[in-house]
Image (cartoon, rainbow, N blue to C red; front, side):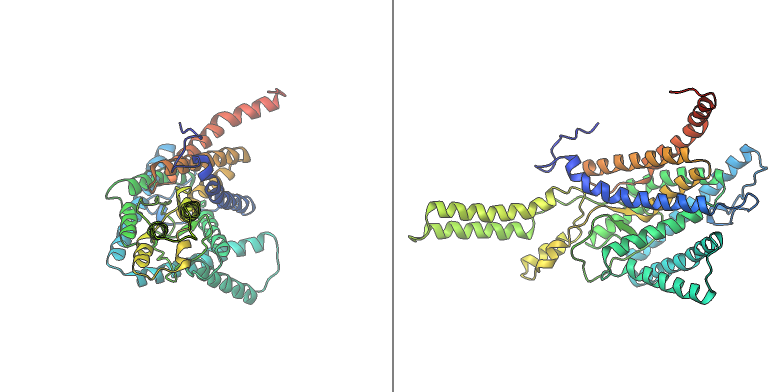
Length: 431
């Protein structure tokens, strides 16, 4: 149990410090899940359509006529193969990043994002046009699709694009991939979600986990986290070097690391100013009295504390450029815009958007009651993760709590709550 009145960092409470971050994370997550539910409801596949053959169905392709035991064994095999492929791909990317093949990773991620927007997004757009009978010629459609995909790649990987446009395209990427994952067979979907939650827990928290190694490597280099992540709070200033976006494209589940307890360059400047004031007060000057010296000290100290308070009241803000900014200030090369590069909020891996939405999309194939239950369970799990993040002050996986609660609430609602509510309503029982 976390006491909301417990003070952290010398001022404010956990709830106060998490308010903006929670809204900034839960709003895009909710939008992504809503869009996936609308897509599933409007583009429900016909019952006779067979599931696609993907990396998640390499071993076993589920059939409605198969017995439950066969479905369970086949789903477990599919999940094991998929997790193994993801683990191998993640370690390969860690190896490439370790040897600084950043150009290859950047180009790979640009190509992957363009492919997702153009091919998968184009297929969904064509289905929507057919579903709602919207007339559009092929040339116009292809031209629009190319422009949409090109702008998306620039928005995700270019620091000069407005942050709102980048956030919007990140949500669009999550919606497109989640809509495709909902085409997986039912047993494979639920087994894969639980397996990904366990993998996320191991990959982030264990010392030799691939995502843990990736985070530590990026932190040791004072670089952006090499993953495709959603920034919940706009940044006032961006470094001219864009973040290296690496993959697994949609399976990273990384929040923020806490601020290190290292003295900043502003602290040394303020202390130096106070020393200068004390030195001036020691000299014989009839224009500077003790009261004036006190006011000058309070002014400098107040200015310094107001700058530091921005950092201390946001325990979830990452400070990846502290080392570079401090060294630059000590060497006399610090610039004013760099002070605001640390103003970052929570960052959520795009894989979290995808698999939250897959869970809700699968629930939407049954009825809306399970959608409501799964949505509330996911939001509660995400809130618990954010509170744990502020307490633990380290990178945490975002899938385990939300996915476990979501899957549990889905089956409880489908097997217990819905039969009770439907039976009571059919017999006109009010409760």
